[in-house]
Image 1 (cartoon, rainbow, N blue to C red):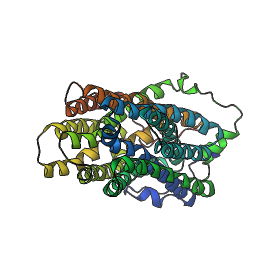
Image 2: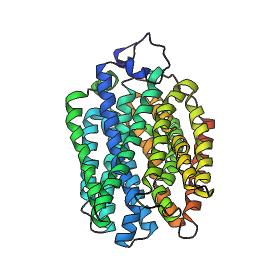
Image 3: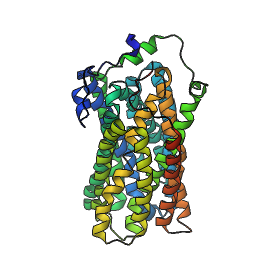
Length: 425
């Protein structure tokens, strides 16, 4: 095996199957990469998930309608799709580490500017800037981490990477609870999004501690650089189509649920901003466990199993959560399995996308396909907001969740299993 094909951080004799064995089997270089990537993704999530938390406040303070609020979220996701593809392509040419730093700076700056927006148009522009960095960082960090661990542990490593999204999301919810307790809503939302500039500090850690993988270093020495459109070449088009369909279903379902869940709790369940915190934290706790164990399940039973089980369970629970008139206590409990199944599949998607593309176009491929889900699935928050004008918000949420998870299920049934596959040079 050539140096460009070697996986540096996998212990060759390791055959363990424990949840945390990926970390024990990873050397110091790989562990630094793990913490940089997961830290960046957590802060990435914190910045993005602040907006769903302030939708109700913006509707009240700026007198906007749900369609406009949903459109702002969708524009952010569309921009993240563009950012993910371009950042992935750039990462293939100049390296994952440099691009991670650039994208973190971009989404931090976009979040800070959002705090000074004076109207919906300005906020849309600033959130779009955030989206460019948000999409780029998520894709590039996933690729960097996938190249730092071996095939046997990739699902679990990517599962814990994905679980950092729940950490960032939970941090946003807790910050909202504290800030809205002490400040009036028209000031509180601005301070909340201004905190999103903090992730820029992570750049200093990445600059000092993270190195390129041997796979990527070898590819960057090659003078024959792939073009931006190489992922559509005959050798890669199948992976591009399958990956895109899978992520459209996955991301469409997640955003249909999670962007509008805070507003659903307030508008239809009549739960206040502060009162909704335990409900959201229960969903987020389920998401964290789902991310972490989804990676273990993907390594143990395969990527397809996780996709199909999650699609069926998440789609069913989305309808039950939004339509069955449970007591508030039961709603609280139900949030955990909903969060679990609406998140577990990400821990299989991230290794799957990295496994189906060769190193030379892996950044572009993962960046495009993962963010194609954000671009098209990202229209769903807008559509949910628009459709809620003619039907209850609960019906709109469950409708688009069902469409999304149905697409993910059909794609999963027809795809090829990649569990255990070594990354291609």
